[in-house]
Image (cartoon, rainbow, N blue to C red; front, side, top):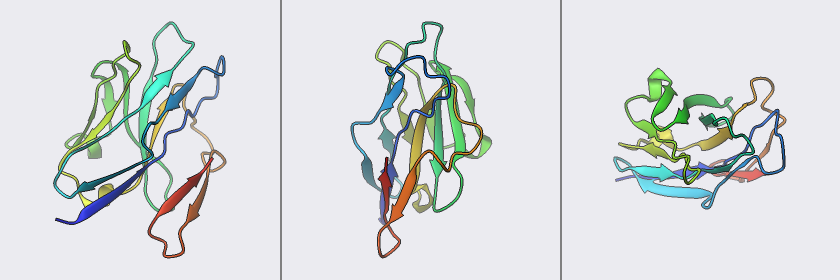
Length: 145
């Protein structure tokens, strides 16, 4: 089996943050898993909203723009982009403020940077949110924030 290198960067892409407490948290920055296996990417969040939260997952590979994977607002409720429905899933657990992303039947094309975002999410220019620095051999993406 070919090992996959999945690099994970989580960021609170928030336009109307009410307080410094609105954010997403990532314990592990990188995950490595074998092709065909399963990986779960963690995302914990803090929010000053008392009316519910919308959490989003995005995938960015290479120099492409981030792609919408899914949105959750309560449990399994929300929507998932068609191209990700078969292998990507998430359940929002508001009691522990968690919305992990589970990827099954891993493929080499899953190697990417994954973003967890707290609503409201950025819909305009995402290029100014972060800077990327490629390693000399152009295989590993390092994230500077």
